[in-house]
Length: 272
Image 1 (cartoon, one colour):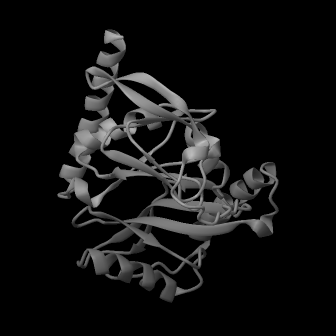
Image 2: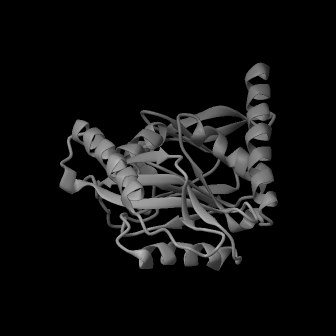
């Protein structure tokens, strides 16, 4: 038991210190954040980590142990293609590119690769949506800027001037501007799961209560109520010290915190 307790303390400090560092590095405060906890062990560790960092509110999710996989299954399909090919859009003397064959051929080749790969995913060419990012660079200052070109292909000099103008909006200057990298993002939309919303059924969680047992908590044994997660309904509140047991994880609610079931059956853990 001592070894388990030391492991838990180590994880709490390691994860908590990393979260605290990221918040501080951005010049923000822990009170401005909500902690999302998932994975098989997220429900066990989240309250200790939140206390360590100074975050008052935690969200846990019905998918818990498979939350990342569940989220990935609802994402649109995205493929990214790059070609590090240099094309000068504007020369040092101020002359703009007037031959678009090489540029357009690069885009067409990247598109063809995306059509091939998306066919392998089960999509038709007409299902594919594109976003083109161009990494532009100025010869004089060497600073790179990402510029999005919604038309994909170059039609005339107005398109070329538009790309150069968007670069100079971010980095003013009068020098050679070139494309260094072509980056084509190909996306196909997928059906998205619609979450079911449940009506509030009151804060009484007694029907989910399984019993009580002694649990080792912060250096001592205390009596904790034990709840069945799948029997909790929208609006139910569980006050710590409590243990909520689910098929894929366990939620540990310490004294001084409460667990509230929202309309999607997710849990909101906050100070009581």
